[in-house]
Length: 377
Image 1 (cartoon, helix red, strand yellow):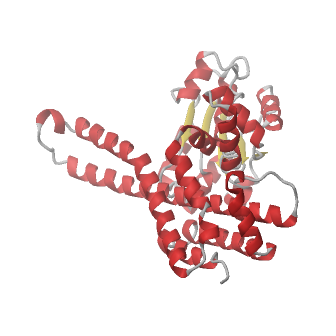
Image 2 (cartoon, helix red, strand yellow):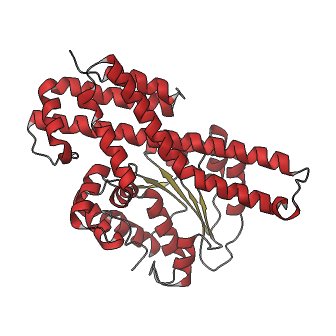
Image 3 (cartoon, one colour):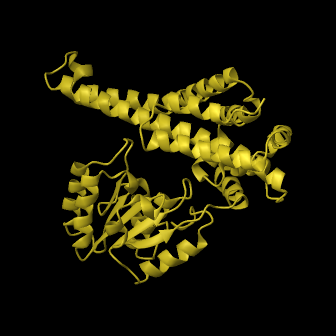
């Protein structure tokens, strides 16, 4: 099994990266693609192949160390905060100036490059403009427009596509031992998002939460129903986000207590209180981002329902994402027009922008959205 095998539906990208490993290299790359397409996985696979004597065999110590995050010459920067600050990037720039410990490349992977602050982006730009001989930058972002024009003009672009449902389903069957029917359902519902597909295939709670969300549109017949739907989506997202972050937060607290000797000595040194405050602030920021991410996922599930209604109204014959609620889709298609559903999709994307770009409180944005999605009396 090579480092490329987990890149689902990206054969064109894989061939291009293999050519680069063979000698068609440059010092900076920008990986773009929709959520779940595997852009960060592609960057890490590329990093492993650059360190491997056999171009990414997946079996050697170099490939293994990159995969588990312990290779001395591969540094992956990912954030659970809302942004990547200038101090963190300056640390990367200092690392980039060093020679690699081994005989090959110093590789710096920046996930969520679209979250760089303006100062951080400018600091990164300077490093990319003046590269060292054996340093490679691999940046990841949803689209080229999400990074500074001056940065993208100095990188080689790699565009990942959304994998097809059959490709995602085959991956789930092959790697996770999921039965074919469950795999196909998860692949359709995830809309090509591999991580989401795995969660839907393996976690009943995740499937139940999604099932509740996709039934909202046909029930938005009154203001009360709209407010209830907004509250339910908000609470479902918070419950899922808390479940994800809760265990992580508890582990961090245990590690902090152990590092400062709180457990062994039963007392708190003077340095403990500021460290605890900093950790709690970081956890709060991470929880906010996680909540927004889960709400955003719910909004994309809503989009899939209106997309299915449009498919039925226009008679395109395209595969339905939500075939399991076909009765609801038929009803929605009969109660609305194609133009109305297009406007509803626009309303969902406007709500996403309000929360993610303009920091509108999720509950307020959701209440406004559900009202806009209300079916005519």
